[in-house]
Image (cartoon, rainbow, N blue to C red; front, side):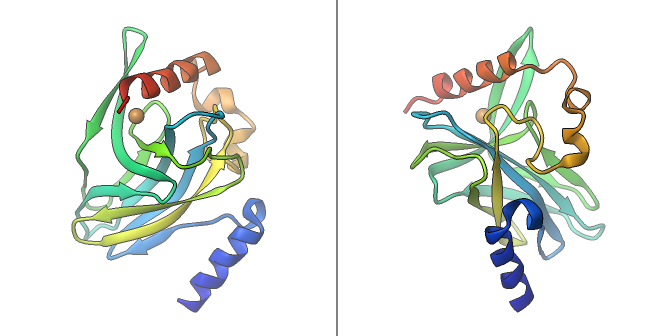
Amino acid sequence: MRLKIALLGLAVLLPVVAYANDVTSKGVTVAHAWARATPGGATVGAAFLEIKTDKNTSDRLIGISSPVAARAEVHSSSMEGGIMKMRHLTGINLKPGETHVLKPMGEHIMLFNLKHPLKQGDLVDLTLNFEKAGSIDVKAKVGSIAAMIPPGDNHHADHPGDAMPGMSPDHMHMDGDMHSGGHNE
Ligand SMILES: [Cu+2]
């Protein structure tokens, strides 16, 4: 435990070099958490991560919260006829030995009523609640506004076009507009 605290402290001091933030509880691991920077005035943000279960563990993600947002939800998204459609998911079922990747254009975490803009390079606290594993706290590294991959992922960053063929900043704009337009409160 002491080692983990020391490592988290190091990650805050040296976010680029030492960013490694996998947290495991009762067979459930949350890894590679990241978020997108938000433009000034935006009240909605998006975050992404991976959830892994070991081969003897099944569980269900039942809720998410963050101190930077009044509310956090899990959404699915899909392109239908060139239009991004999002759906609020009440949870995610996790089968044994599975890796569930939340990513742009797929399942994602929406952060509503942001208390401040998310700035590139910041770390955002996220708490994920699981039916059996309880709550898992991770820090999401904030990447650029239109980022499609986790910040600091150098292997993929060399070939951003390969990672997500056909995606352009225009799509992401539409995504952002959908979010603010579809979730007025
Ligand atoms: Cu969404």
